[in-house]
Length: 259
Length: 155
Image (cartoon, rainbow over all chains, first blue to last red; front, side, top):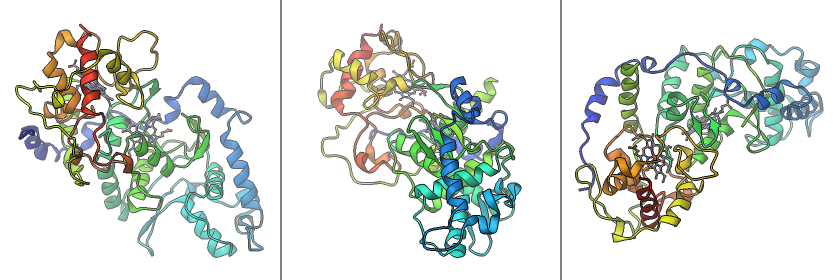
């Protein structure tokens, strides 16, 4: 037989009982601290940051009449979202008691759009929805991420953490390996960050596209030569929730510039 | 600090427990069995002989071995490499060929907490492989032997 019995499994059962925080060093740090100075400068410059094009597209969609209806998001939320509560925006993803599910900011926007403006529903991560998500999240720039971690969220976060610590794909690593154990190390010339969610939707230099958190997680899974979790699946929502909760306290940077 | 590091290592050992292989497909027909003895694999995979030049190409190719993602290799002109694994210069002076073979084939047989991919790991142990990678090994047996032949030159 080619596989031995491995004694370390035995210790595992015991050590799993230890609080994982014992092994996690230090506090949350934004991806901003890990990117090259040139990318930081690009993010900070309102003329250079390519993500702001998505914000502008989202702004037009927000203020304009939605297709097939006479209503605009701005009719309820003010021109440029003036009456949106940025504190509440910083809490996404949130838990919806009635539907007993995790609701991302994009889902919330999408539902609002469908029910209140009567326009044709768009599929998850449709470019218009990502643009709207980017615009709305950008309203709360500078606000501290504040995802609920108690109540019904506690169990969901545990499930998300479990997924985050599972190995996937031919690369056979977990998110945890790269983003908790090796931040600061190089992976083929790229500095690994903590994989935080506070900059999303972000402009990716690597793909030249505005990318939301779920899409970024899917891209990491593809990089791991794994089957990415589908848009809207329970798994991608749990992972997105867990990743964003790790960013609690970090300032929203949308649209961040990232590799 | 050392204790801290050890704790991380042991905790990482627990990760595979949560990553139950979903058992997609059987073994590929051409998969060659290998035996571990004394933390090494003595016999070349499928009895194949490796080629040094091809091995170096595979090791530095991002779509194949991609060893440079994590390791530094003494190949002139390479700038982007990783610092996750130890540099591999002089590896053949530190490890015998059969020992190197096990590290490349499936190093988790010696170190269950390792993050290094098993380049000839039993595909049934892979959790959620991408569609196009199902039932496949990371490298072919020939490619693994080529990489080993190359590493053997790093004295």
